Image (cartoon, rainbow, N blue to C red; front, side, top):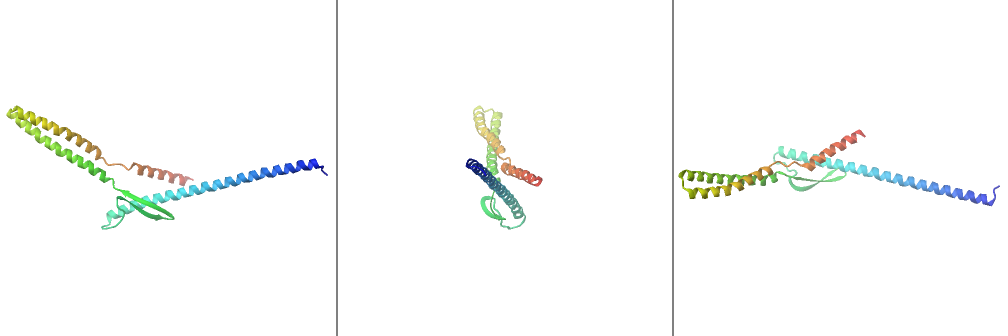
Length: 188
């Protein structure tokens, strides 16, 4: 039989063992809960990525079919937001035509061309008056031709620079990320 001091030490050892086992069980429970949340987040991220990809493909399909089908009512490219369901996800689709930016550049180019034409007319008047050797008239025509020709050259240069077709950088970047993500998913 044990004496009272040995029973007390045994009781303390059992209590410490139970406390240690409780801490280990609680830690395992927290780890399991965290792992479950991480798995849920990965799943939700994959679903959102698939829904976004489906939305892009849906918009492309609609644009392709609406241009080939006469009178087809589809997505407008004016920035209107359309709600679309994919599986259990709500997808918002918006298409914006980038060609409107080139219209302003074309207008600047046309204005520059008109001013260049006017400058050409004044230069011709100047040459004509030079040939006629009437000094005051040609000097005035030269000043006017330079005053119109310099802004024309500037407008033509700026319009030409802005007429370059804008590249949808963010869309290209997103598509590259989607392709990389899909490659990683198929390897796993």
